[in-house]
Length: 288
Image 1 (cartoon, rainbow, N blue to C red):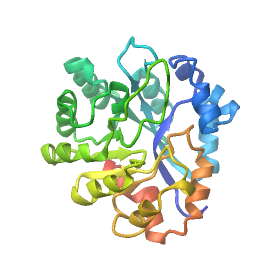
Image 2 (cartoon, helix red, strand yellow):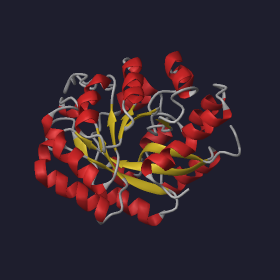
Image 3 (cartoon, rainbow, N blue to C red):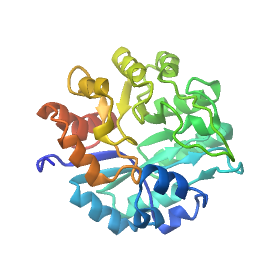
Image 4 (spheres, one colour):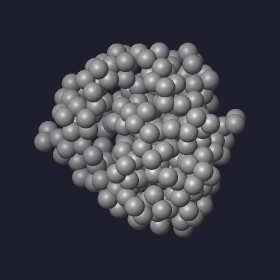
């Protein structure tokens, strides 16, 4: 991996004992058997262990997600308290930033919680999993949250593409077609939108949205770089080199694996530098 590029990972999940205590116990089939996460990581790692892994992979900073996975109280749902991420950021402010998950069914209570996370806890953006609510990104229930993000001056990440998790207990429709960002970007031209997970299998649709709208970007997390679609690699290596930000969705993709496989893509030096670091600094208005 290039030694001179300190990467910033824009999509990372806590794997601490405290965080795992909030998650359903039936996730092993997805993370270990389907995705291939090693048992040690799946069972939990400390913040110090995560930092050592980041250091080994040349990752300077990570955005920690406090996700809201489905409506509170429903089967398979869980919501990680903002306080857990805020504590990790407070312990390592030079290494971590927080992203506040949103639940559209919380209404104005959720909007106020988002504002508190940004204004009082120092979170730098919002995060959304549309599939878990079975509401496409252009649904009206999200609009108060989008408006608040504009008011606060923070971006929002949202999963686009298909739902990755299959559960017979709570089957989820894939509501994240990237084309649904079109209306959102038109209605909120000041809102900085990041379509994470690339948009697979509708990645060309996601590219079209990022090409059309100045305020739409793509996150490359959750898919191993060696399997990235050819059209996506061409995009980030050419006219889209300013529109893609690096992420792993750790533990879904291991830090070192991501860096190693990106290095093997043979990207132009400017494209690789912008992907791993410069684009996210500009998008989130971070100190360089």
